[in-house]
Amino acid sequence: MPFVHPHSVLVVTINSIGLFMQLCYISIFFFYTGKRYRLQIVSILFGEIVGLAAAVAGTMLGLHTYASRTTVVGILATAFGICMYGSPLTIMYKVIKTKSAEFLPKTLSIACFLNGICWAGYALLKFDPYILTGNGVGALLALVQLALIVIYRNPPPKDEKPSKVELQNVV
Image (spheres, rainbow, N blue to C red):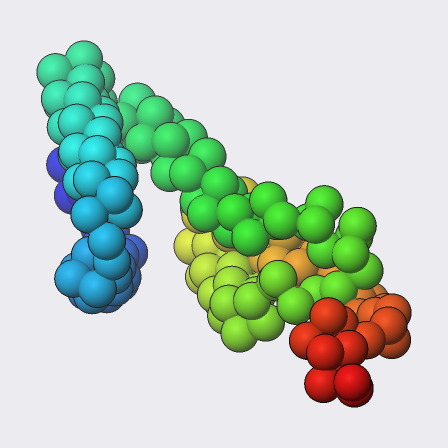
């Protein structure tokens, strides 16, 4: 938001493109999903819009300097960025318990790692601690995901007992 931090055209442009891509993804998912999930999507989007409106209003009305706006919005963006990067790790318990990485999305983990590295590099050039913190932690979280994928890439063999369907065909 230019009214939060001046001279941030590159970051605003790239994040606007990302927002457009996410809206396309959500629209496609919304079109092909059932009624129950549509209600969830609308509820979540409504909550996000209300939260964003509250953040913008609070920032504009309560904070009158660029420095204070940058601090508050930077902390919020860092927290949400870390949550975004760490969201695939919510199934980490399942991966470790089953000793199988089939539940972790490989391409998403690679993309998150590369994205985090690129943005952390950009943040080091301009020294933006908020971009650096969120994306540095994000790159580390993606690295944990990639490590789990490597460690558990070959799931343990399943019991070779015949299923009921196979037993019925024997007789």
